[in-house]
Amino acid sequence: MSQPQTTTVEVNGFPCRVWTKGSGPKLGFLAGFGGLPRWVPFLDELATSRTVIVPSLPGYPGAGGHTVLDTHLDWLLAVRQIIDKSGLAGADLLGASVGGSFAAEMAALFPGHVRKLALIAPFGLFDEAEPAADPWAQRKDSVAALMCADPANWDALVAPPEGANSIEWPIEMTRAAEAAARAFWPLGNTKLEKRLPLIEAPTLVLWGEADKVLPPSYAKKFADGINRSTRSQTIAGAGHLAYLDQPEAVARAVLAHLA
Image (tube, rainbow, N blue to C red):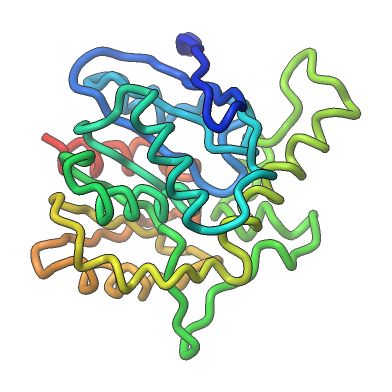
C-alpha cells in the first residue's frame, strides 16, 4: 500500500494535515471517531477511481487547534476553512461518524460546496427512545468493540506506527477523543435534525449492521430528515466505523452513489 502525498493547510493559525492520493474527480473524506492516525485500505479502494483528499480535523492526528473552538459554530467555520483550503469546495464529500456530522452540516449550510454527499453513521441526532452510546464514558479497553464489529480493526488503526514516541502517541490519541468531545459531547447531539432539510445534494446514508454507538434505526432518521430521495443502506458485518470493518463493501457503495 503506497503512501499518500502529505500537505498542510492552516486553520485559525494551526496546521492541519491533508492527505491526497489517486486520480479522477475529487472526493473529500472527513474521518470518524479517533481520526486517521494512518492511511487505511478503505481509502485505497476509493483512490482506484477518485482523487481522495483527506484533511485532518482540528485536534485529530495530524492537526492542532481544537482548543480554540469553543462552540459548535466555531467548529463549523473551521471545517468550512478546511474544505476551502483543501480544494474541496464543490466536490463530492464523504464523512463518517463525527466527520459525517460535519459533512452533513457543510451540505446543509453551504449547499454550493457539496456536489454529492455520502454519510457513514454520522453523529448529530439523539432519540431518547433509542439512545446513542456515549463513547467518552467507556473504559479504554471497551472502545475497540464499541467502534468496530471486529475490535482488531480499531486496534490496528490506533496502534503506534513505526518510530512513534511511546509517550507522545497515547497523548495524541487522547487529544483526538478530547477534540471530538469538545464538538459533540454529550451524546453527539447537535440538533442536526433542524438543518437536515436544507441539504440539496444527492445523499447516501450507510450504517453498519452491528453499530454499537448509534442504533441502525438512525439511518432512517437521517434519510427521512434530508428528503425522500435519500437512500440508506446497511453494511453487513460492520460496526460504527464500517469503513474499517468492510472497506471494500463500503467503498463500492460510496463509489456507486457518486458515479
